[in-house]
Length: 512
Image (cartoon, rainbow, N blue to C red; front, side, top):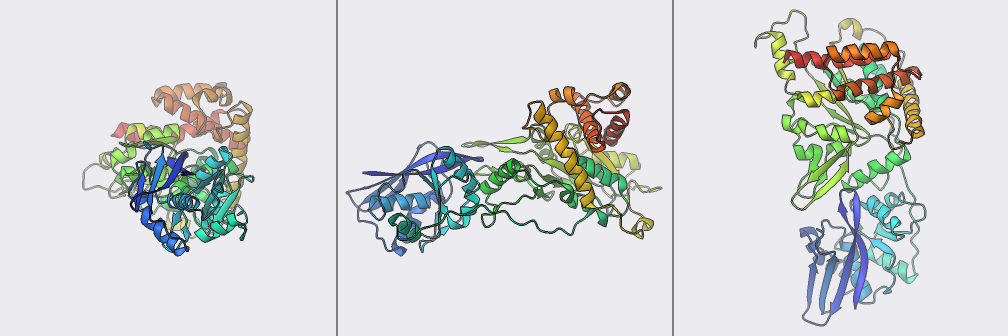
């Protein structure tokens, strides 16, 4: 007789159903696992054997065969331990044979019979709920699984003995409740930054519309300080965004204690990061930094120091909001809707913007252009806001703290985002929540400038030689500026300010 247990295999953030078939048959004692299993799954034999012995059960001296179907789907990870063990327990009569019907099972076993947490419990729970099945998972992941649905049956156990007692009726395991990490009080506030009013304005616009931002300035001007305070003015994740972000974090194994967080991600990889680290990949096609920053901020400090090929790999994800990772035996797609915030010096020594500075490498303009040209034109074209961050003077530092801090700016950002969400829902595009995400076709209905603004935009497009992408990105920024002002129509002033944020990049491109 073959015992069937349901589990999952992960393809990106999707959980595909896998049927674990356990057969105990006459023959020489053996334990075989088949079905295109990787090393971690093959090693499950020893973990299962030791866990059953520690739980007071001995494997019969017979031939044990475990098949993971479909056999042509690669099986990776340690979460197959628990379904194999429970299938064996049902096959030898330790638990009722029909107890596992209607459950999806995943978990890693310790040699003492304990059940350790695994990655991907949230996507597995969502997939199980879609099939009208319950979930058996580690106790440490129970709160994470509870987010899938209030109706899904969840058995979250700490050991094999607890599961056996639960099915026998001698111990009742209560359903875990979904939990959220309490928001940690941040000490970072925009009020800490003295001066840099134009940079703070650009930061507010970027947060309100979800726009990409590039800051160019001398070392010590405050670029990293500004970027670090961006999360303090971003609104918390909505329930739909929370599930999107948490599914990626779950697959990557970055959810702590089974509790989700409503705080938007902020990822700041070092400039030595590889292409696989940034966009995803590796042997198991894991999500990269751009996916882990989904619905949040990807901060790239010292932008020209990144490998140019790594930077250019971001071009398609920044445009489409998703990244496809292709390997010999994998092709998965991860969400990657991020706000790119980048910082860089004007030249290698960082002093090109200082008045009267003479560079040893030659003309300052040429030295600056050579350094900034490490960023390709197509990537620069995707950045909506490009600002110069001047050095702070001693006169700025002795000023009292600014009267307006992160709380006041965050209120304006939240109000502008509410307007955008309602606007796109009203025209039948609820999947788009910010102006930066809106497709070009939607701009024709939502970002029409007045006659004076239209004339300015037409003249500027010819003078600045804006590409079609640049034209639409100017309209998106102008729409965000109008939303911050509470205006229904885009005016000439909104377009003039939006165009000013692209002028820096156009100057650099011409100088190079």
